[in-house]
Length: 350
Image (cartoon, rainbow, N blue to C red; front, side):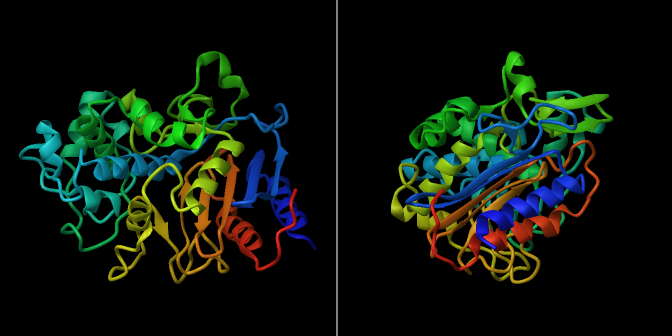
């Protein structure tokens, strides 16, 4: 069985099991696409997914924002050892005041994980106050705890340091240099029906389509560092190629190496700056990605994974939260797709 048939069949089986209504994938290297395709519909009973469909990237937003943050470090507008309160005066005297940019980037700040702050704090002002008041679960640098709150703070720090709104900063430092013309925070109202649907959200009382799935991002009301980007398969391929090209137009070779270097191997989970490394056990990368590979996953069923040694990337886009976020076997399916993508075999161009 060829790799193309393997990935297509895996994802068709996933759709048949109603893990998602739609999926798109791409495997590539510097020479272009090795394998790519689409299966399914924008929603159950909806129109077929196309190459122009926008996908809610969810937490794959984090490393894209992270690249912009590191570009500010490279330009001298920000330092990795800067503290939160150095840029956000509202955080002075709070639990977050002394946290460093480097600890936020590696999820080792001690801030808790994906906390549903929106439930008790329905305004931007209230939610940001709640972020500042979050208790630390561990001293900074003592543990890896995946934290969306940390990247909310990073987005605010990036805005303060650059003097630009986050969407403009990400556009200038990441999207435009790579040519990701169909990627951005949110969609215009008239384009939302062409996006891939996510959850039938009890909080909003409707199926979410073309609007950010993450409820904390909804309450924040403006582009945020932890979630909110929408993209197409082709744009994510462009990012994958830029990364296996050593950072391409994004960062200098030195800054790129600094970004992807493991920072938390002395802790339980491997993290680089804004990226997840390949853990020894249970990594979403699967079993065949190289030891220096890195990537990120998104709650909606998205991922980008890069193996710099093999010079190969894999993009996987699904709406695994449609119509509900209940786990239906997607985690092992993603690992299987990544294994198929990184299987050692000669490229067969598509």
